[in-house]
Structures are given as C-alpha cells and as structure tokens.
Image (cartoon, rainbow, N blue to C red; front, side, top):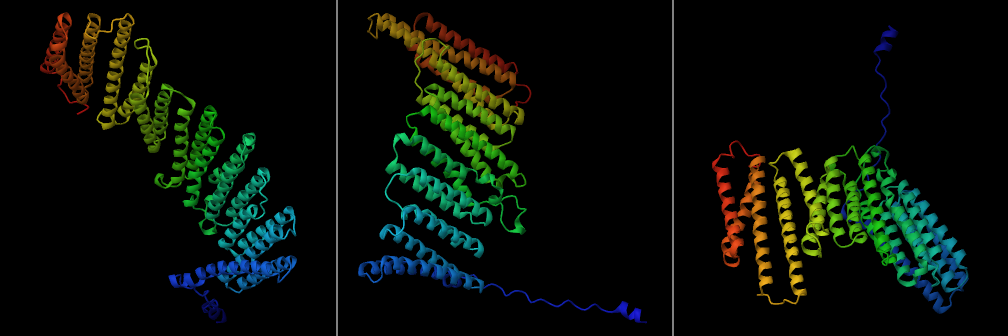
Amino acid sequence: MGAAASAGAVPAAAPRIAPPPPPPPRNLENVIGSQWLNRIGIVALLIGVATFFKLAVDNNWIGPTGRVAIGMLAGIALVFWSTRLHARGYKYFAYSLTSVGIGIMYLSLWAAFQRYNLLPASAAFVAMIMVTASAAALAIRMEAQILAAVALAGGFSTPILLSTGQNRPVELFSYLLLLDIFAVILVTVRPWRRLLLGAFAMTTVYYVGWYAQYYRNEQRVLALAFATAFFVVFASLPLIRRIQLPISEEARDIAHVRSKTLVAIALFNPIIYFFQLYALYDDHPQTLAWVAVGLAAAYIGLSRKLQDDLAALPENQQFERWLHLAVGVGFLTIAIPLRLESHWITIGWFIEAGVLLGVGSRFENAFLKNAAVAALALGLVRLIFVDNFYTQRVLFNARFATYLVAIAVFGAIAWKLQEEHGTKHKVFAVAILCINLLALLGLTLEIQDHYRRQYLDISARGTYDYTGQDWGATTRARDFAYSALWMIYGAVALVIGFWKRLAFLRWQALALIAITIGKVFLYDLSNLSGALRVLSFIGLGVLLMAISFMYQKGWLKGSDEGE
C-alpha cells in the first residue's frame, strides 16, 4: 500500500525562479536621457577641466607639479568610481565617468611634457601607453565599445600630444603599426568592428601628413616598408575568421555577417596603398605595373579563399568575395597601360577580356563575365579611336595583328555561346556582328594605308598636282579596291549564312552588299573609268545574280538556327 502510494505520488514542483527584470525600453527619450546626455556631459567636463588648467596657469593658483598631480589623481579617482558604479548597474553613467577620467589623465600627461617639462618624452610616452592599455582593459571588462573608442582615440592622439616637430618616421610608424595590430586583436575579442575603421582612417591621416611635411627621396624604402605593413594588416582582415564571425556563442556557427566597416576597409585599403606607391614611384611606371599585377593576384586569391569560407551562403550574399574579385580585376586593368605601351595596351585588354571570360565561364561567375565585357569595351574604344599606327607592310603589321587578337576574342565568345546556348542567343549575334565589323574595318584600313604609301611615293617624286595622272590613277584604284573588298566579303558572309543557316549573318551580308550597291551606282559610276568601271559593275552584277540564284534555288529550306 505504501509502495502504491509512493508510486502514485506527484513529484514536488521545482521552485520557480523569477525571470530577470526586463531592460528599459529603448525609445528615443530613453536613449537621449541615458546615453546622449552623458556623452555631452563628457565633453562639458573635459572642457571644464581644460579651462581649469588654463586658469591655473594664468593665475598661478597651483604649481606645475601640483596641477599635474591633481589631474592624475582626479582621473584615477573617476575611473575607480566608475568601476564601482558599473558593478551596481549604472553602466552608461560609469562609461561617462571612465571617459572623463581617461581624458583628464591624457591632458595631465600632455601638460607635464609640453607645458611644464616635468617629464621627458619617453616617460610621457610610456605613461600614455599605460593609460591607453588601462582604458582598453576597462572597455573589455565593462563590455563598452565607447571606452574602446576612447582608448584608441587616446592612443592615436599620443603622437600629436607628444610631438616635438622632429622627423622620426621609424618611431611614429612603428607605434601606429602596434596600435593597428592592437585594434585587430581587440576586435577579435569583442564585436566592435567600427574601431577598425577609426584605426584605418587615423593611420592614413598620419601617413599622408608625414609624407606631405617630412618625406624625402632618401626615405623611399622606409616609406614603402611601412605603407606595405599597414596595408597587410588591414588586407588580412578577411582571413581572420574571428573578426568575420559574430562573437556571441549563440551565433558562432553563422558563416558570415556582412559588415559595412569591413567592406569599406576592403575597398579603400588597396586604393590608398596604390596611391601611396604611386606617390613614391611615379617615376617608375614599370615598377608600379608589376605592383598592380601582384595586387591583382593577391585580391583574386583572397576572393577564392572567401569563396571557400562563404560556401554555405547563396551567391547573392557573398558580397565581400565579389568585392575582392572586383579589386583584383581593377588592378589587372590598371597594370596594362602602366606596363605596356601603344597598341600593346589594346592587345593586353583584349587578352584580359579573353582570360576573364574563360575563368568566368569555367566557374559560372557573372561578375567575371561582366568584367570581360568592360575590358572588351576598353580595348575596342582604344583600338578604333585612340591607337595610331604607321604601317609599312600590308597585313603583316602591328595594327592588323591587334585586329586579329580582337577578332579571336570575339570568336571565342561566339564559340562559347554556341556551345552553351546555341546560335539563338542574342549575344552570339552581337559577337558575330563585331567580328564582321572589325574584319571589314581592319581590311579597309589596310587598303587605305597601301594607297597612302603610294601617295607618299608620288609626292616624293615631286608630283604634287592632285589632278595629275599618277594621283588620279591611284585614287581610282583605291576606290575600286574598296568596292571589290566589300563585294567579296559580303558574298563570303552570305554563303556562310546559308551554310550555317544563320539569318542574322545573311542580313549583315545583305546590308554590306546594299552599301556596296550604293557606292557603285552613286560613286564609282562617276569617278571610275575604263576597265575599273567595267570590272566594278560586272562584279556587282555577277554577285547580285548569284545571290538571287541562291534564294530561288531554295537554299533556305529548313529552319534557321539564328531566326
């Protein structure tokens, strides 16, 4: 019976633990009252302390040693009081008192060194470093990003507060490098990524200021070494997984969290670094070109590393990866005009477009494909509107070689599109059109330059009469060569269009033939004479009859792939 009663007994309910009180609502009034007024109070108190120091100096109320001692003791007391208040739950007020105390200590040490000469530079420097380290430790202990920002601000203010106006770049940049590394370590402990942006900005300001005021050519290697060190520190942020991940235990398995700070640093760090190198090596474009190639390889490699790290995320959420890839491609494009000259720049852009297209197709990367289009556009604009060629031989010259490279790239695009999408893809038709336009333009320019050399020979013989027999015969031969080229090219394109059943190619051929018809009837009829006029019209007539026969023969039976 006892056992039955025991079996049927209901276990006693566990004591209920009262949940913690909810935090105060974060409405606008609460934020202003608890945070912003405190921050304004920090500024007001710092101004008041600075005013007190000024009055003390002006009126000799307290001796220099007493002023510094009072300031240091007051700062330490405020920091100590703030830790007690933080332990009781008054965290925002504690942050304010800590910031005021740290600021007072910085001002006191500055006065001891700059105003009263009570401390040597080395002692003041060590003391300020200790204040900075203490502020950082308090920030970690109190979970206060604002205190970490105060610590970094104090650290970066130290060189200004202790400046003697001397050019001492090794000491300055070594100290800044340590601060940057400290900021990176701090952010691996707490999720305060915005501190990195402040460290990056202040480092850049110091470097630019030093360069503008103190730099000399004999310091080039030193400036390069520290600029590279700063760049490496901030470029390595994507590789530090602890910075990329949220810090909280609950979110530690998340693959990546987009950070505007990390994006901004990833974008501006390589740009500023390259400008620094440009300022140092503006008289060595070849060196800059190789640096750009190296940076391109590094950022494309970083992009590949990020692709592995972010594999769990969809493509449209891997923004940092695409950003690094874009920077790499940008440096590759910059390297071409720096390393190469004249038409080699154009060839370089076409080759870059081909490589980007191949890699983009291999990895199904839309960004690389779009970058290939941009490189193609740069190459085309330069080839058609910028490059100036002086040829001595027909076809076997730099200009025609450049046109052949461009045609080969567009041919590769057409071939790849035909494999993946067939000939119905619109971009395939555009690629074929570009091939035809480039081939026609290149061959037409070859004819033009061939006869230009003949004009020069005529001029060298002293025949400057543009109506003379030699000059006129050369002009008529050139005009006939244009017509013959266009007719032959149109006929070949039309045959290929029938053979491959590509309607858009046949339309291109018909358009070229129509232009040739207009030239023959409107220009050749009045400007050509004799055998050239006969050949022009007979050739056109035979071509048109052949085209008519093709269409009447029914060569278009069956469907066109390109319709």
